[in-house]
Image (cartoon, rainbow, N blue to C red; front, side, top):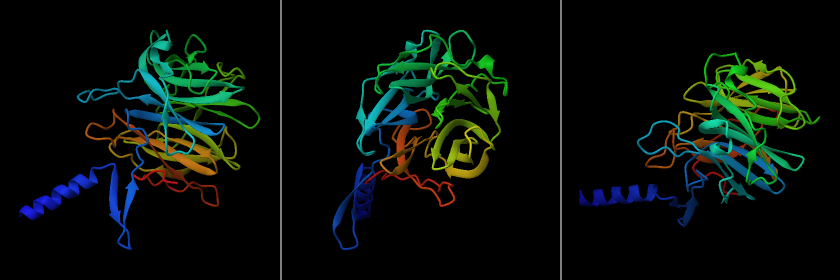
Length: 325
């Protein structure tokens, strides 16, 4: 019995390490590095990535909820950069909710996009005077900031959308600039909205439109691969990631199915899809960091993404190893 207890203790110790040792088929011991989550110095959620020149810039919300607090506590956004998708460099906090004088709290999901040498950061916050969530814009001359309020007021407020009667439907902004230079903003919870943006990137250029998608919850993300546009989004709750495809950014969109299963130990699932140095990547969050990780203390991960010959995406396999080469 004593020997069994010793063996079990050793097994627990081995599996809890960040780097595990495994035996190869030829009897040699090799180190297996577990790269996911990629950010371990703090809790991060709602990742959005920007490829700019020879680097990837990863933007995320900072989960600051105490261990006994079971909701989101988020006051700022953070940024990391990488030239190989394996090693991530932290940068000073570039943006906080307090940088928007009209906002009250909640540094929720966001995305940064570059245009004409400036970097525009579309963020979700709670509005200070208009009840409900709102979308603001910050701007910087650098992808790592510092950023400042670009508009001095919200771009989108809850009273501007009536597709659903909730106070949190104006969240999760994502922006895409099409080949003709036209920029589009997509966003929404329980209803997916989109609208054109003016060239200055801080004003709407036309009416707010609506897209019907099966079991749409939140977290829209637009990307393009070859001749296809892809609209991925959080599906049902707890959330999987599903996607639709179109030959036009304005649709019609054809639903294609589930892309990513439930993220471990997290009710939400928020994705970012990019191409970098000839490889496609799927960036997401889970609640993997223990002992206190979970839905309100999340961690960003990344795995490779692949396409089928017909343009559909292969289901993403979430791994602990992450990006190894």
